[in-house]
Image (tube, one colour):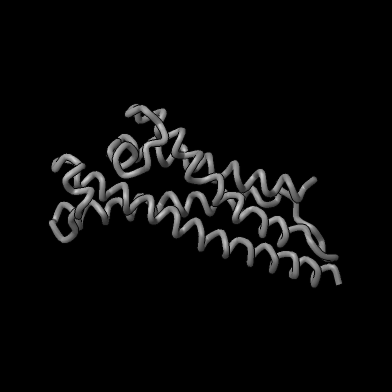
Amino acid sequence: MQFIAIILLSIGAAVGYGIIHDQITARICVEYFTIGHPPVFSTDDPTLLGIGWGIIATWWMGALLGLPLAVAARVGKRAKLDARQLLRPIGALLLIMAVCAIAAGAIGWFVAASGWMILVEPLASRIPAEKHVAFLIDGWAHSASYAVGFFGGVWLIIATFRRRARMARADL
């Protein structure tokens, strides 16, 4: 049962993060979701878009990382970790992702507002000119969250496996 709990925890953490993240970025630039994404939702309400895309765009990442995390935490003869023991490391990863998303959004703002990066076609003509910088801020923030989430998730899987190895050595 703990194996499934770890996978569900990972999916829930990813979805929760995604919803919060998208609530913020949908308010920065709703066009990032209405024009920059496939038309899945027939709304331009930032709250609904943030919830919808927060779920659609993240559940699979939680599952993709949750399964090997469950394997790293539970499979084999070594002492096993349960979902409760992974709350803190997963929470730390989410916090790091948020900080990196904020930093990347700020960098995106700087390079876009400075004219060092511009929105190109086909999006440039579809997004109102006054929203180009905001669109790029969202793009930078989302890219950072995915990258840090993926690589941080891989690190968490390895760290979990190593934690079990340390626990086994301590039991000797």
